[in-house]
Length: 316
Image (cartoon, rainbow, N blue to C red; front, top):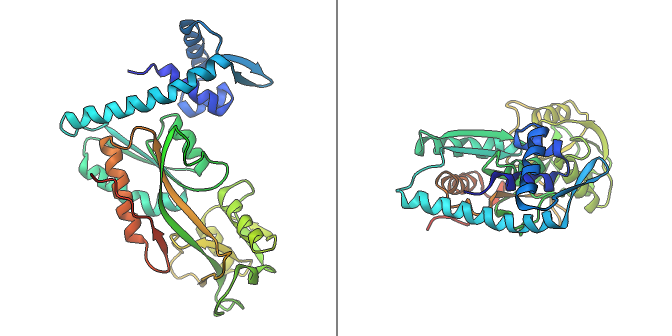
């Protein structure tokens, strides 16, 4: 077994404060502080030092963290080997996380398949922004996350995680019927430069994606309204209050007076969706099944004019 205090230290290193790490781990700040004090005592070195309102890892702590990543990954691999040797046992739980479209379109059938295959396991879905998904993975609050590749996220070669491409989801321009671009051929994003735009709040992945796409097309979008949910954004577009980008995986309200306009040209925006698990866990029974089921679901929803599925089976 791996000392759980090493996991606590790793989360503190990632989050920068005792309170933030405690929130991720589901502990109280005093419990986190106590675990780190006892760990420091047992290894015989100082692990943290004050850095303003935050804490900073000492050189000794960073050295320990470097070995911890390898230890935890190897332990997870051993767990998978033991479960397979025992006849395909289970973890007893599968905790999935994903951004809004993933949580509504991709993850429910995965959860259903897992419940059917492992009826005694607890399955849970959490909707969360990509950055939060990685925080939850690191804190071992979720086991598998589906994220959109945006900044700032861990690099795909980050040794703490195993990340694989799942699908590329093209975005369309969403306009009300009767809009000047609704029936146009060969529309580019630059053709909508003069429109008012409906986006998420600044700092959120969808806002970043829209601004980046428009900037690449040569203009800065006029941010007229803020919407978090696709239903809200669609209602604002339908009312003629602006236009928006919408991924092809996203579902629109039934009966909405809206038109998806396919965007052409080199600047047509695409969001790249990938899976992430903690390094060493991909062969554990529920996680392995979930990864393969995700690829099956991605292939079923991907079609010409919708999304491109990245074929990469985990079956052996």
